[in-house]
Amino acid sequence: MTDSALLDELMTLVEPGKMLTDAASLEAYGKDWTKHFAPAPRAVVFPKSTEQVQAIVRWANQHKVALVPSGGRTGLSAAAVAANGEVVVSFDYMNQILAFDEFDRTVVCQPGVVTEQLQNFAEDKGLYYPVDFASAGSSQIGGNIGTNAGGIKVIRYGMTRNWVAGLKVVTGKGELLELNKDLVKNATGYDLRQLFIGAEGTLGFVVEATMRLDRAPNNLTAMVLGTPDFDSIMPVLHAFRDKLDLTAFEFFSDKALAKIMGRGDVPAPFDTPCPFYALLEFEASNEEVANEALATFEHCVEQGWVLDGVMSQSEQQLQNLWKLREYISETISHWTPYKNDISVTVSKVPAFLRDIDAIVEQNYPDFEVVWYGHIGDGNLHLNILKPDALSKDEFFAKCTKVNKWVFEIVQKYNGSISAEHGVGMTKRDYLTYSRSPAEIEYMKAVKAVFDPNGIMNPGKIFAVE
Ligand SMILES: Cc1cc2nc3c(=O)[nH]c(=O)nc-3n(C[C@H](O)[C@H](O)[C@H](O)COP(=O)(O)OP(=O)(O)OC[C@H]3O[C@@H](n4cnc5c(N)ncnc54)[C@H](O)[C@@H]3O)c2cc1C
Image (cartoon, rainbow, N blue to C red):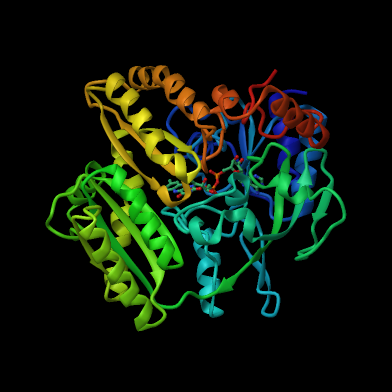
């Protein structure tokens, strides 16, 4: 069958106008936030029902055409990139909240529901959806499940995985499976739901997800604390964690703060310049808790771990303090950063960062390096900014060389080469630094069960063999 006959057949499987092949759409829907690979899909389809998704999968199996599930395309590992003539399957038109159960505190979502849409829905019901990060206004629940997204509240609420009560998926064979039936307890063998969470669309499509909600937090309050060095951040974390139930504990470097200040639309937290900053958040549900936070702050100052600090006194101040952290990713995207999203157990963070810092200083002496991340979870974002004088290709080639040394340190500390952004295409060549050969063989065998013809997002997580 010719390519155009194939696409004519595909077009009949979706509603009129719901297949696009124009250059601008292929460019837009063929990429995520990464800039490493040129998008080159052959078409983009927008199913409006589970039946249409199944029909697309059957068509793809019949004609051996690769499919790329596509959410909000905010991914940072090129997992939603279609660079090899694939068909992009976008969930932009499966974006409805289908049901809410007040007693179970669950919401049934189509995969294209935007993360913020679910957060706002929860708020309207007096409840809370706690998975949150800077791209929540664009990312979709299907994509969040595909990456098992983390974010800024993981220290208290965990990753997306914790909030998925049940899933409906269309496997790479086209079968519809209902996984876990939204149960809290279900001891009936393998929990296949968990396999689809973080699978980066390599096993099948999430076509419906039942998400859990939590009670709304009470009077969230943030503190930003400046520290004299990186090593002081960990005792600060210890001190606050002992006294308060933290909802967030983030960090960023002075270079990250300088970029935010350069925007001109975010107030400085305080005047004292500090090499590193911690942003922590807790529920100041009563005066006692707020006093405990202030006493802990004073203790940290006395110990020399903190040079200066500020605590939010209003919702507006809370939001302004969060902007210092939340705007970093978007602000530095101007410099085409090379990103590493690495993690170790929290106790190993100081030694790990010292080792990584030495490698980075030795190998990137001319590059601007911006550190920030979810330090309370042991997750560091290492961002190397592209100098204007270097082309994108030269810059990425230089950064790729140093990856090997960075990932050797990750391996030495038994850490992960991707804490929350996924493997996609950008990290797939380094998977062996975090996963054993035996584990990778089992993972490939699992993929073959759900997707025997290899049509689901090939080349992501592992190279195509
Ligand atoms: C400014 C910024 C800040 C960010 N901060 C964080 C952060 O703090 N924490 C974090 O974890 N991530 C963060 N991210 C990364 C990104 O937002 C997350 O990975 C998010 O979960 C991706 O969702 P998406 O809808 O954009 O997915 P996409 O990028 O479209 O896709 C991601 C993966 O999911 C698959 N997928 C999409 N839909 C489906 C479906 N229906 N069924 C099966 N597979 C599917 C895709 O094939 C792909 O493999 C950030 C990104 C940006 C741009």
